[in-house]
Amino acid sequence: MSAQTQPCLRSLYRSLLRELPPRPVLSSPRADLHQRLRDNFASAAAQQQKKADIAEQYLSYLKAQRTYVTLIERYNPGMGMDEEERVRLTARRVGMDLPKEYGVEKEQK
Image (cartoon, rainbow, N blue to C red; front, side, top):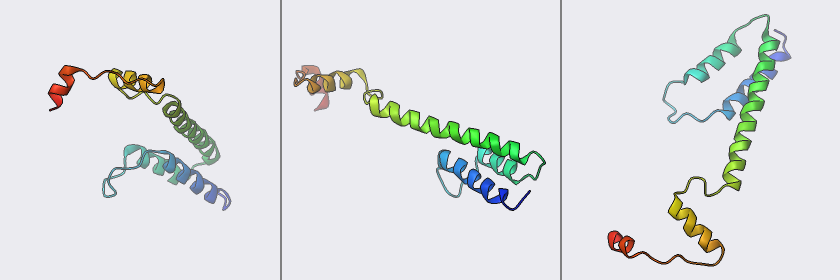
């Protein structure tokens, strides 16, 4: 492996790790995916450039997925809400407030 490809591979490896979800606890063992990535980048094989190209494709895919999720959350803000909350916010958007229900107030007290 040439001296020029080593920093490129290290940069690619770090970029992949940044795109993966963070580990919950620093003292926890590495996830299988993290360990597999590390093993693939550590192995000195003749097909290192091919592996680097595949890793770059994975990196592009992960970045696109992160962007997709961000856009879905931005343009569909009511996606994670229940039906009652969505109806209440839709009514407020057009300047109306929903009437308070008698049974709901009684249960909250």
